[in-house]
Image (cartoon, rainbow, N blue to C red; front, top):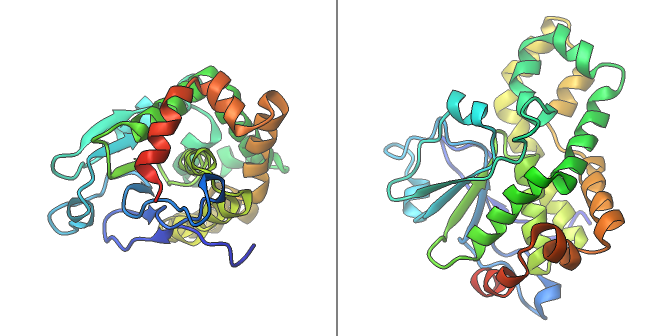
Length: 268
């Protein structure tokens, strides 16, 4: 699995964890098929994006920025869009804005709160539960259905989708799109885990202060990385309830009519 192709990191001075999913093989779409390069991008939020000094998104012609964050996150750190890009919103945690993925920065600022709510091994369990909810909850399903529909529409590419760190809500969004396009599970898992170094880097000073103030390093690690168990929790929830990705798309997301367009737009 270590050699399984993933998307590629895109260098950007003011956009963290920017990746292009192009080139990931799609055996389910036919021999030799892959994700069309340059059309499907993922990242952390664009709150610090400076299109004047860092024109990478402008040069790539990003047409749509799809924001998976809560209302509170968007208000606290609004995106700076590249010129001409249209914003779309799909709030994955709308009914649970206090869920662990949305409180990453808050926990790193407060070791006492982090220990109270995440200590004793609860951190990993809370993230696993959050991933199950991303599959099962009606609000999350609505958000991801909107992402799929938007990605399938003509005139929305290149499309960039993101949350705050670009690892959990974005990670499941990438996994979902790749599975619908025909990627194998090994490639999906490799892409999911490939973000860890890029996620850890911007949080390193916060983690250092967190630990210096008595915070548990394991809690910090859980907060600032993705783990196989998280993705497994989502995939297991999907399989247990719907059996496979096609039935999930048809019955849970109700995007069956968009799948042919999605595959035509994003595969090569």
